[in-house]
Image (cartoon, rainbow over all chains, first blue to last red; front, side):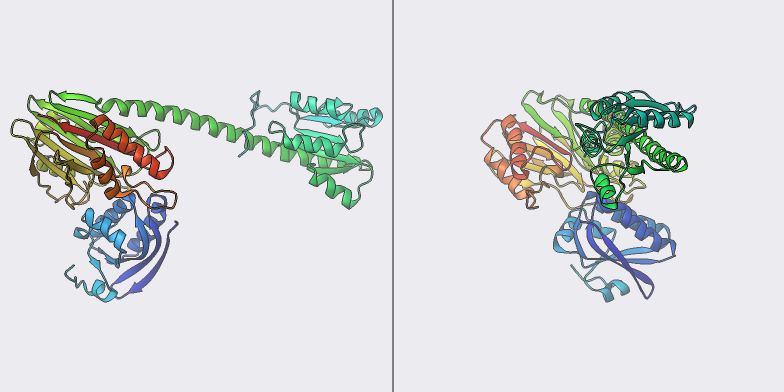
Length: 116
Length: 402
């Protein structure tokens, strides 16, 4: 399934609303969308994963890459509401160590992490 | 998809030969007059007196343009066009149909049956020249497209030969199934999704009672992951490990590998399980990096997935990986595998999954290791309903009989 992305500015950051699969086939689209946000000087990228059904191994690599690139430009990346299957994949690869996961937008904005 | 058109003689682009026109008309006077006019315009002209001779000339000479009379005995113009459009060798020919009664309905019928353009028999010298030139422009564009297509196909073929040769090299890096040391048997299966796979594994005798083994999965598909896999397999050689890590401890090995192999600029990385087997003390020491495909099948019948949740290699340079130690009893089987084995969808999209894989391995527990490995692959193939795996598949089974 293809991926659609939509930017939404929030105080001190940008929420990227993602729909579809974060996979090898959609990697360029995701990279382009995220890189455009980073180039604009965004310091906090929040990936809304609520409508993402599947993340494959290439998708995981892209998430790690995005988190690295934002850190290099003194920014950070957070993740919002991943679906259970995606959450499981993230958990097995311990991605939350690099990208904090939040269940609601307010917590993501304030960086208030709930005990999982 | 249609068969690509084969071009028998390469055309010289720098000094173009005169373009060729085939004139098909049963009426000699009209045919000779048109041929003379075309020759004066600088074209090479071939003449045919009926449809059958015309088709033969078209096949033999591949003219740039065919000017065809509508009314001919036996095979008329529209029938000629239909035959040409059905023939994969000829279908891109440019055909200009000539008629004396150019009613709109007739023109529509001619176009529908395969003509590219029309020329009235009453057309002026000027119109004939213009229509022939327009036909030649189309013919040139189509020829160029065919040439480029052929060039692309040739290049693709060359690339595929290169890939096949690289794939044979990668296969030479893999160990052969058989006895590793007395009492330890290894059976493996390897099914790359493309010609060239990014999965790699090995089992190596470090000393009489000490074995090193690993299985890694490079993310992505094709040449780049295969090259990166070959590169990390060199790093994982024992002499290299002693030099770079100074130890065989799986945790130390992965901690160093994590520093040596950062994420690529495209976000590619490895997942890996690395283990050492001490046959004298009967212990297995292992560490994993984002890799879930490690299963221990105890002689007693129980199975356990050994991976711990942790980052794949290269995600974060400060990560340390710790080894875990497990006692081994004679008859235990250790399976290292890539996720391509169990992440296979059935026709409805449902994945085979680790639980079904686990169940299959337990079911095949009483069979020889060779059958357990081949039977597991066969079960995954049965689930997906075809032989071609969507991702690289590697499975290495190790039975410790000592």
